[in-house]
Image (cartoon, rainbow, N blue to C red; front, side, top):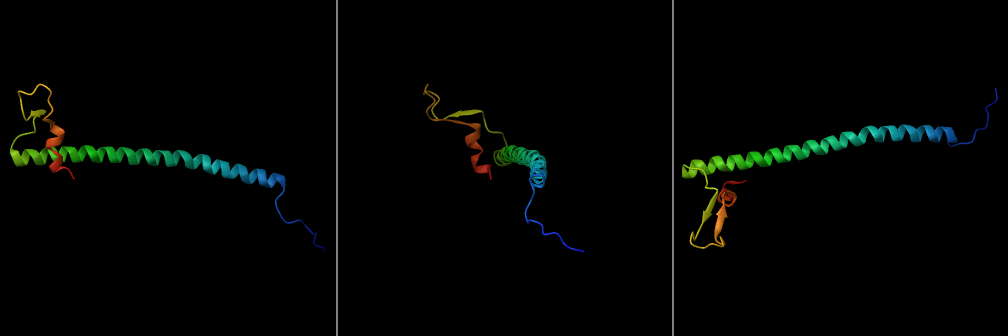
Length: 95
């Protein structure tokens, strides 16, 4: 038997088939990556809300009351320049 001398390399059809397989794999991978990113964002948001809730509980354990919605250092000042919201009062209790 004689062996045929064959050119090394891909034919056009083989190259098109390989590109189709790669495109299919990438098409399957992109939605998986997007859903993983969305799950990470959702987990991060949930963790931030949990930290705020823990800060409220720690504030309550320390002062035996929840922080007021708004606290004015000078109630006579109409501009409200020296006023703080509840979010500022729980900062020491955030991690």
